[in-house]
Image (cartoon, rainbow, N blue to C red):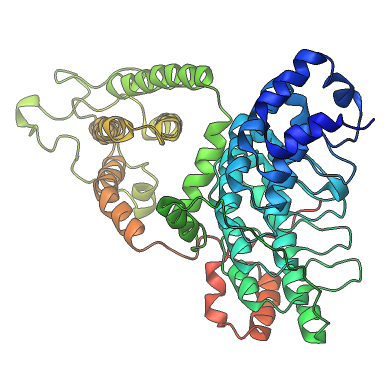
Length: 488
């Protein structure tokens, strides 16, 4: 079925009034077009010419036209993007963000096409509006990262590579980068293989220095790794030059700063925040509220047990207490006099003679060890879970400071309850460590530790060889997180 010539003329000229007149004459003029699988709709024509008012009116009357393909395999957004009609692309995106995922011929979506055009602001806009589009691939299994490298758009690759390390909308907190950076196309090539084929060493260095789960030993369908390709000096893949019309480009200083930020290296602290946020984004508000109620109850119950331990505490008038209450200093009664008949081993294991001083637990050192271990573990995990839940909220600091003081108070109570000197000293040590924790966190924030996980010997050797080929310093190998490749 062909489009009505008058309707086509109205779309080519952007005449909205003429469209209304045609609909008055024939109310079903758009129905036949809608029922045809592959056809040039009036929305395609308007998008191709950049007639915004006509395109938005047509989208209002027939939303289904936005996802239809013409006989060349293009959607209206494909055509607007191809012809540089950026303003219309933005309006279509605001109407329906999923339009960037409409697959045209060969599985190329508007987002994948944008990765090859050099329009980085629009590419970032697509990612912000529809984060899921980063996972789209062509029928050849090519991701946006593959396409950006194949078409020689280095800046687009840096933008994409930086974005997926920072996004908090990933379905998986720990395997998202693993999936994207190690994705293989139909020829078994990862982005590292593509960069090696095109001799894009700067991009390879960017990947090697990043905090992603990069599989440097991956082999393509020819059995070659990226290092093999570099050493064999294979022929560079041909690229495609795409003309971009910037007449309708929307320039924004904020967008420029975002793009520059995306291209910077991601530090380990930020990566941890991203992982935490991804996990939390998959938890509903109702679930968060329920978890906070449960953690509050557990913290209350555990803290109460530190004030009233099982069996109670020794009293001042207890006949079994060898010391008279009046002879005991209130400042050091939980630090009993050492018994020199005890061995060092007994002292370190907390099994020396009980003090039986007033205020200390009636439990024996062995019984107290079990009570202390279970109690501290439960208390610590509950506090950690509470901090995790509230981490990204604005009131985080208002909540974490009282929790921090509560933890110190908890170990002070445990110190007083301790039945022997060694247990008292252990709790004192934990109190001192907690008091030094803010300073340690400050230093860790100011001077982040690059060596987060110990690297395996085989992975280290292999990556060092690849870095030597690229002329990189071996010492920088520690900045990359290396993991043994999981079997898919």
